[in-house]
Length: 128
Image (cartoon, rainbow, N blue to C red; front, side):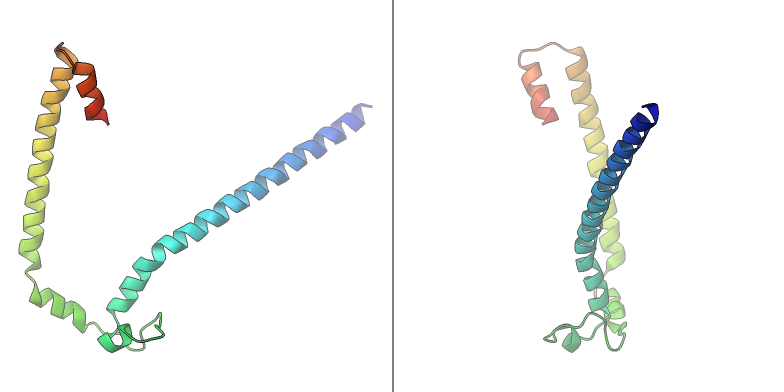
């Protein structure tokens, strides 16, 4: 009788493992499919940047360029002042971070230490 109980529990355990493996397979399958769908436009953009204008506008489109063209990269780097654009972006980010930390610290102190009418409502709005 004990041998039959062990065999039944082993079958039940094996069935649970098979069900879990099947579920894991479907989860990983859909996650992989989703990641391919999400990354494809980025790959398409990179590959299209190496195509000529005529090849990029060709119908039906081709995935890989027939001849790898790097001239568009040098043209883009010479036509726009990328160094000053990056410098302006960096300055904007630094000022936004500094002001955000400053005002958030002041608001956090006010919510933690001061008691005033509507404090909980305002705190909920800040959290939202």
